[in-house]
Image (tube, rainbow, N blue to C red; front, top):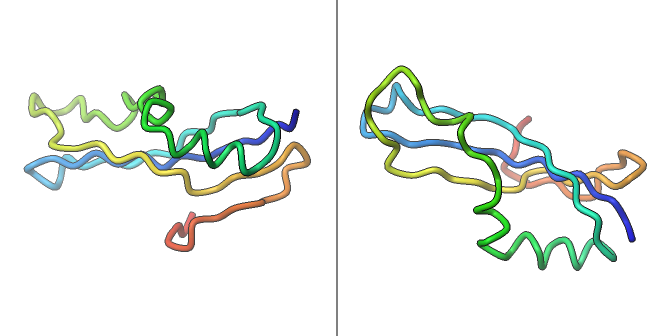
Length: 90
């Protein structure tokens, strides 16, 4: 088994855009290889397991219209970057 650390970018979207929030969350995965990890990350149930409370704006009563979760960086057990989303600037 190989261990990978996945960095997810979470973004909440509100009617009032000033309430939008962004955060990065890391999660470790023990899988056979990188291909198995990508298969797992394509499963919407796996993305639903990511805690998104960090992008819920506590300064408003309004509920977000949408919360977007994307994996943006993957590193292997040696901290070597093996994947980076081309649009991610972090």
